[in-house]
Image (cartoon, rainbow over all chains, first blue to last red; front, side, top):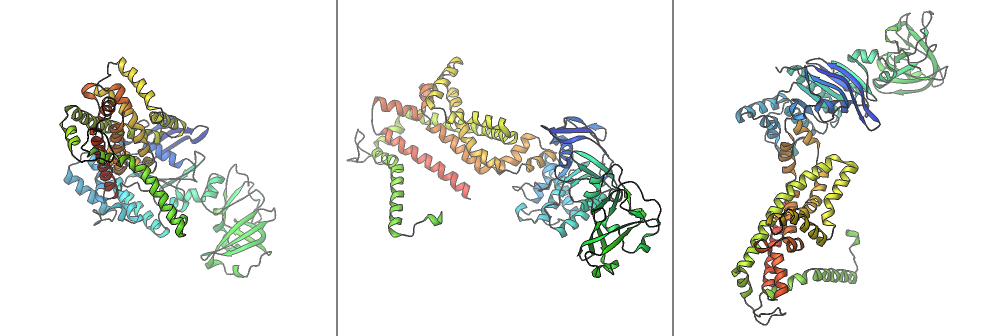
Length: 346
Length: 263
């Protein structure tokens, strides 16, 4: 087991001319944690990763690996394993030479380097491909070589920059599972960058949602999804309805909340009995309906004019097929799934 | 290109004739020297009335010509060895720097290939004179390196523009300093371009005469300089023999490099 280290990012700022890529970002990553930086392109997540790697020098702020300040340390002295988006394998070396490369740089004795490289290849299930040329590998195999090369020198931290974005959907799901398993086996502190919210939810211990160079929220996947702290996070994480005060009424007739509420499309039911008396009801006119296989997606126009999305699982959607556009429909959501967003305006 | 190929018979004949003419104008002045070099006569005459190898014997038997050949080959090798690494480093910086600064540096590096050779030679003469380097091999080498760097850059810049720089970042993250990343990752993958750049730098030095005339002297005289001097003093077919040998050397070098590029 490798000894992994915590990472401290302390008020890091980076600007390119007038464009602020990182706006005083602070973040503590625990030793052995799997943390995902999630955000749209241009949100600063890759810049932050490259600052940790040493390829971007912050204008201000500090980066600590354990209690060592690495802000100005050269990339080759940081001992951080990096998996790049396009793999960045060396095409003039075969698989084994690629994986042995970091060990050769560290003057590891030949026999030991060979043994460790083969171990790393076995860990990523590439036994038997050691002598292959890089050009002869599939995308998934290249990804595995990149992983083996990044772990073989036992770095104390791993950085991954959208490593699965070039793979097709099925392979991506397999690799998500395998990267997470590799992380759990090695216990290595990992920072993972992606713009895919499902990937972030599936893989992470904690997710940091970034936008415009700032961390919007950092929390466990479930908290991020159910209890977003800003409108941006709510909408980035899935089909979210943000409704203003007064749009929703309490089923039991009590005073409704005077805050802006976030209700996810899939939190709705069409049957008030499932929801409970402390839930909320939203009534509107059916504008459109679509059958998506595992669920129905209904678009309701509320009386104030705002449209909301209502997603009903096919198994519970008895009456959905018969609904006609123009018909009045009431959607109910249980209290536990109604989340106030302070400060947001619908 | 294929659509531009004429299917009319007459047009095709015209096209081929035109191509043959262009090639003839390009090649004949070079090729006319070959029979001249095998002439038995004391004068440059075409066509030669009798043939001999005496001018080749004259060339290989002359200590002066041999010293010139040696100087030229040493100088060409040294020029390539100094200019190509410098050009590679310069091109890497230009590529990584980007923007207007890089463009300005690139412009400055390429000026020696634009400025008239005679101006460069005069300027270099004064700079070297101040350092008491006129007449030394080192002085000529400096001049040739200045001329060879832009030539090498023109070959290397497009090759680096196509290079996947993530590989260098990967190498750096795996523990390579800049020198090892360049030597272990960039150089092996740019082999072909580096070979072309080396050949071009070598040929630039081999072919250069103006700087050599101004700066080289005595036993450091290059072959082109000696040829110019000999043309001024006496005209005999030794020049033709040297030119023929020269053409063969260059052709062989280019052939070797192009064959290696194909394989």
